[in-house]
Length: 251
Figure 1 (spheres, rainbow, N blue to C red):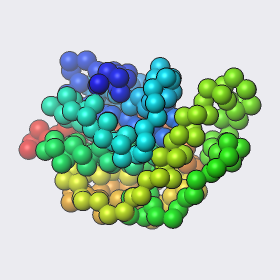
Figure 2 (cartoon, rainbow, N blue to C red; figure 1 turned 45 degrees about the vertical axis):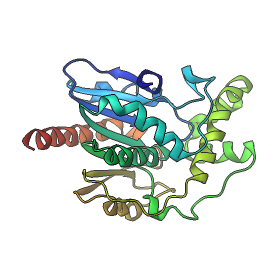
Figure 3 (cartoon, rainbow, N blue to C red; figure 1 turned 180 degrees about the horizontal axis):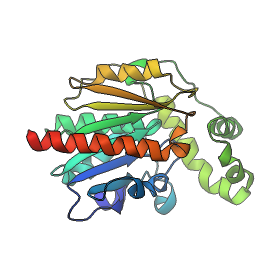
């Protein structure tokens, strides 16, 4: 199950710290393929393989975001003997948070949770409504990421990509959010300073999701700031991962 759900971009015997990356709605594991280049060589870089895209094209979509988190927590169970840090962007932040809660319930919490471009669960109520038509969904995607225009303009690519985007929008809009028990690990927040989906102040609400420390880093850009600011983001994550490693060794 682990191999079905996780793609390893770097993961050798020296990688006791493993960064597990959760893609945004409509995204795929390949969004993180370049990250090993910007992170220390002793950091494993793993990306979640959502169903219904790339080499899981024929797998059924999950019934809900929490069901997806259930499957992911099961898939990561064998990795919890290592130092796990979860990173999720947009929808992926909610999935990563729900997975962190499940791992904590099982007595194997992650060493840290990193959330990007997403309101905390208690601030999600009423923020979105399901975009019913394909054209509305495509327009919404392009509002955040104009580079996707070429994909949707090609009939073959559109037919390939759109089902996953549509399914993920249903997951996002069907996720109830609400109150969640605090985590026992630190939470690190990231966002773009001009993100139309979430403000820095809303991101600070993630502080309520942990008994431990919370820290927010605001970078230039919109909802997909992490593309143009990848080097700055990975430099900051390198510091976070180093701090987590030193902290857990001390404990």
